[in-house]
Length: 428
Image (cartoon, rainbow, N blue to C red; front, top):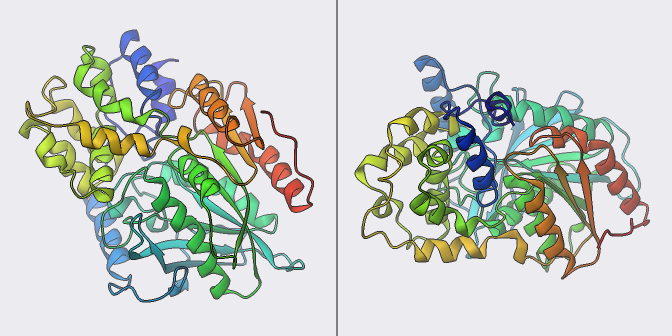
């Protein structure tokens, strides 16, 4: 994997890493533990553009109701969406806010988008594809529904939308949650599976309120961070039967072995490898703190590493990448930092431990440097030990982002078969 290929994979959103072969090799090893994708535009950005992006996100967040009242899935607001985030083949696109719950069951306001197809409604209503996006960051400016043509994550989000547009053209309602704390008040619990799964199902309910032609059958699908979310959605015991999850598709899922990540940063003697991975550290810490308030990232990192947290709280992965080169990789954690609580929390969010309750397809590319195939092989083996209807699709030569488009045809056939009550045999 050349350094050039690596930069393309992460949308050139981070400051250039070391060009040594050692750094490239150890970055791949890190992927065995972090397994998340950064998606964004090049690091270089005009100050005026950054200010515009932040003001757009601020408006986006403050438009959401602050007092959350209503049952899960209650549609709070809806307005036509005509920005870059709209899917061109849709009959209409909507920016919505709706009620969901966090991992503790407390009501929250979540934002997202709903794209309605131009096709005729089939019996039972249009099927719904609930899409979970990959890593963009933990600040409001990183919310996909706030995407603009020059936005910090547009390189990734625009690529995703090309594939999602084919789904809406094929007659699916495509809903895209921003997740908890992205685009709305509160912090984003990055890689918290239960929270992400909640937001995925509740936007389906909101879409059904928005348009009565939306059916109750839905399919969970996501990439990287979103692939992690799709697996947790597949494992939930949905007590309400107003909507019905039929299957899940997890593309290059993140979070595999994530509990080993902090020891990588603390104990790895290879400074080049740590430098290359630094932009992921603050979003893991901030995300864990959002889910577990007892975790305080500011008490874990040194003053010299504090700029990582500051950048993550106000910008996306490219902003973190800009400050990362100045952070000494051997002085990240305070001498008295207790990493055990956050390590335990991260272990609880590893997808290897989930038990799917619906047919699930796991997608992987052989040239993926962020989610290496051996990691996904291990994940599939773990899933198969607990549930038999697991399909594993591998795409030769596909990298982390390419698997989204490369798996489209197989994913469409897989979901169509399930809609026709013809369950594909699992690969377990």
